[in-house]
Length: 133
Image (tube, rainbow, N blue to C red; front, side, top):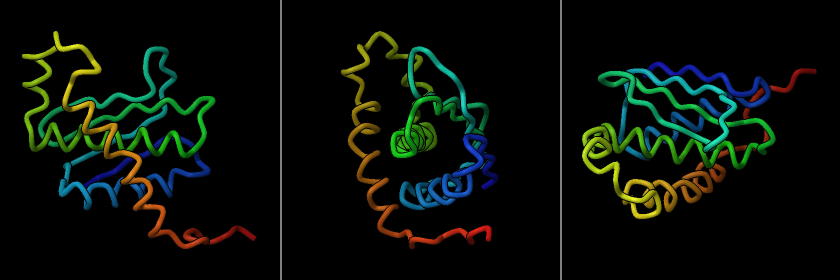
C-alpha cells in the first residue's frame, strides 16, 4: 500500500501509522491512498474513489485539533473499506436520495471511528518518534 499524507508536518508521521493500523483493523489493502489537507466549507472530510484501488481522502485541518482530525481520518477510512468491500460507489449512485442521517454507510463510519482511534491510542508509546535534540 502506497500512503501519501500531507496534513501537518508535526503529525504526518503519526497519521501514517494510524492509517496503516486502520488498514489492518478494517482488513483492507488499498493500492494507493492520498490524504491531504483541504479547507472545506460544507464538511470536514471526504473520501474519493479515484480508480480501482486508489483513494483520495480530503481532511479539513484548519482550526481543528489532532483528535478531531484523526476521528475524521478513521471515518473516511471506513468509507474506503465500504468502497472496497461493500460497493459503496454503486450504492451512492443508486441511493443518493436517502437523507444523510439515514445512510447506513454514514452510521457505520460514525459509530466505528472513535473506538478505532481509542484502540490505536492504546498501542502508542509516549515517544514513538525520536525527539530532535
